[in-house]
Image (cartoon, rainbow, N blue to C red):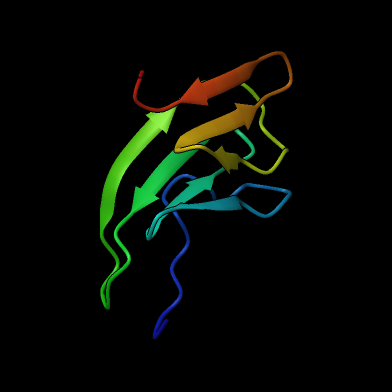
Length: 82
């Protein structure tokens, strides 16, 4: 990667943002529960921003094409239904 950029809205994070790859797509989750979808390219491109409004300090997990996020009070499974 030729450059480094902080995800928008993460300047006050006390912990580092957590990263998960789904295929070649990086998902970055902040401790405030915001997940950023970033295009893996030479230039920074924010594809999506999703907020669950719960503290999230655990690493996101990818399993069978689903993204799992554990927050302070919930476990989320994000992906396409089968």
